[in-house]
Image (cartoon, rainbow, N blue to C red):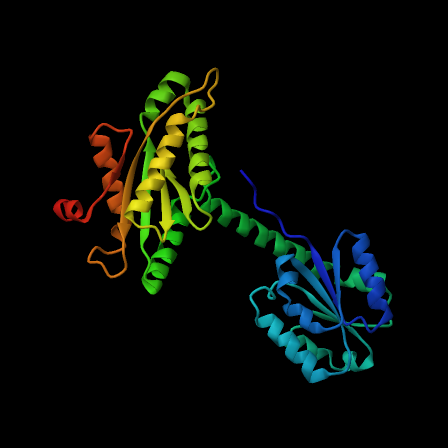
Length: 318
């Protein structure tokens, strides 16, 4: 399973009109930060800087007071800006207007006559807070990533699939395209666990998920619902196309030899298919429910097969 990628620590040095700012940049780089230089304070709003984990910003004051204060206010209103310390370096004019710069969003204002080491030393407490802020952001991102991904297979879990389903249902409704769903599970996974042990059973489930992932189209979605049950959303596919896709996956599973502890394991699966068209009487929320009904219809009929849930059967069972 691929882990979430942590942010790179970035410090922005914008408009380095004062020589001390270049020395600051060198000092920060020597401490392991990625230093991004810019000729404009507009870099505060650069999406790339935010994505890389902006930990602090050192801004060279250049005399356009109203413009600078507005830039600080805009940055502080942004979602990414609230926990990032901003330090302003300038001459006497900046020091005289320190209160206004602080009210606009600067955390500290330094004289350009100070040494780079002195500025870094004075900025350190807030700079550390900026690092801590991004540590929290990274943890939250990783927690969200784990909350949406199935740990065993690396596929989306039910929660993430539900979000994807809602989004595609709305898209299908707007552009008038069909939407199909396949729900499947492995026949007799309990027998695999009892014969070979749960680690082998987990391996079979993981490999089964890999077959579905390889078989789907780029714009389709495959997720693990739990246990040995998976779901496959086919965007723009009608019932016959979805059934053909299910049969292809069915044959692939039947032909596969799943890695076991000592010898290859063979399994089969049952597949339930459902399709909706925007504007039909059958509401889109029944898409997964009908595919699940088709799956159990296949189980009742002997397993190891593909079944499509037709509208007339949906009406009868309703």
